[in-house]
Image 1 (cartoon, rainbow, N blue to C red):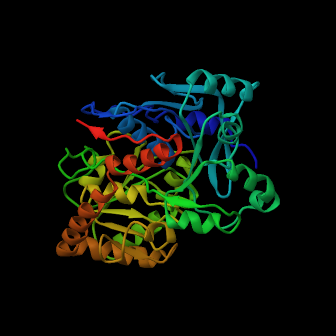
Image 2 (image 1 turned 135 degrees about the horizontal axis):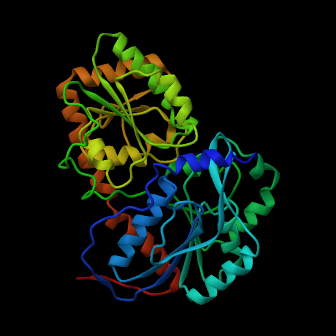
Length: 403
C-alpha cells in the first residue's frame, strides 16, 4: 500500500476549499440532548462523501440541541473550527484503486483515549469502522455505545480475507452497524455477519436547488456537460473526456465543465489536450449547486460507488443525469426516471446518451423534475432523525423534536 507522493498532496491543496460556509439554521430542541462524537479519517479540506455526511449530520444534530464533536486528523490547509478535534497527521495512501487516508503520529491511542474521556460522550459514531487508524482505535477506546457507518462498496478485500476473524471481532464491538446503501451490505456480506441497518446519505435540498446564480465558467452559447468529483481513477473522468470528444465528433457543440481536483490533475489536462471546450474549474465546495443547476446534464461515469451522493446533489438541482449502471447508483436512480444509465466504461454508449439528453428538451425536463421530487426523500432532516433514533435506542432515552 504505497504512499502517494507528498508534492501531489501540496499541489492538490492549492485550489482546495477548507470548509463550507453555510447560512445558520433555525434552532429546535430535542427533549434530551446527547453528547456525540463522530470519528472519521475523512474531513475537510479533504473532499468526498464521508466528510459531507459527517458535516451535514453534525449541522442538523446541533440545530436540534445536541453537542457534536468531529474527531479527525490534521490535514494541510485545514482551518480551526469549533467542535472539530484534530489528532496526529493525515497521510494519503493509494489503496484498492483509490486514494485513502490514514492518521499517523506518536501516541495516537493515548491522545484519542484522553479526548473520548474528556468529551463524556453518550455515543461515539465511527465512519468506515474497519479501516485504520482512528476508527479502529475509537472502537477499542470508547466507554459508551459505538455506532458504525459503512460507506464503501468494494469488489474484494485482501485485508478482510486475511484478517477476517480480527475484523469480525471489531465489528461485533459495535452497538449498531449502519450501511448507507444496499450495495454496501452486498460487499460487506461477503466477509462479515452483522445486523445491518440501512440509512442513506442525505442532501440539503434548500442549498441544492435550481434557483441559484450561474457560475462564470459555464458558457451560455452552448449546452454544458458537468463532471464533478475527486480526480480519482474510479470516478471515470478519463472515460468522460473521450466520450466528450465523441459528442463533438457527432457535430454537437457542447462544453465540458470539470469541477474537482486531485493528484491526477496534470494527467487529465494532458488528455484534454488544450481543447477550448473543456473547462477545468478546480475544487469547489459551497458553490457546487450553481454548477449543477446551470448545466444541461450531469455526467457521472464512476466505475465503483456505494452511494450516489453527487447524483442526489444533481437531482436536487433539477439537473438530468447520465451515469454508469452500477449497483451503488441503482440504489438512488432508475433508468429513464431521473437518469440515463449506461454500461460501465462504455465510451460510445456514454456519448450517445449525452447527445440524446442534450438534443431532447422534453427528456431533460422530465428527468430533472423527477430528480428534484425524489431528492426530497433524502433531506438531512429526515436522515438525521433516523440516525438519532438509533442513538436513542442505545442510550435508553426517548426524545421528541419540539420547536
